[in-house]
Image 1: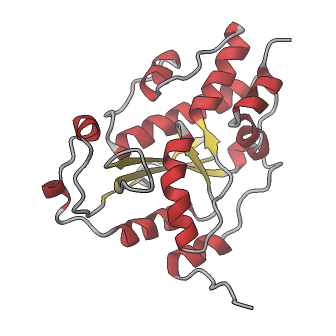
Image 2: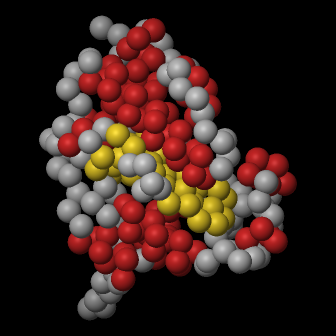
Length: 226
């Protein structure tokens, strides 16, 4: 039998860290909003070129606790992608390699529940990298799904999708620098706190309920009309 190697370094510390149980009230849990910039949207051929992360504790953003790094690559971004994030290969020349950037991700995520906006995009990239480090992908929250759940409860309907900037506008929040990994992570963190607080007025929210509500079908069952 071929034994599976154990994770090492920062990945091992992440794997050993205790995450909050599902029944933990959301404000008592530690969370972390993340955002990526990539050369394109296909995780099989494109690469991560920037990572931003903002920790959340006691229902508040941890000021000064954020993390941002560019990631070195020689792969050129797809034309549409570079028009969005404005990052070119020369901009990444002095950045650390992906392995070092991932170590920072593992360090800031240890013991926290990750939060994304439109989680499927970032997940498609990070899940592959976690697997290469022999680490299981953690449960997560998605502010797009939570935003749609809140709008469905408030208005009786919700759009099929909602951008991060539009969600911030709906919540009456100023959006930070868009299409910058740290700016979008901060906007995501603010949106998450607002949405968790609003949903808490419908029913007490826990780690498990917010993770479950981040799955669209579950959100419809729990917060849908009637």
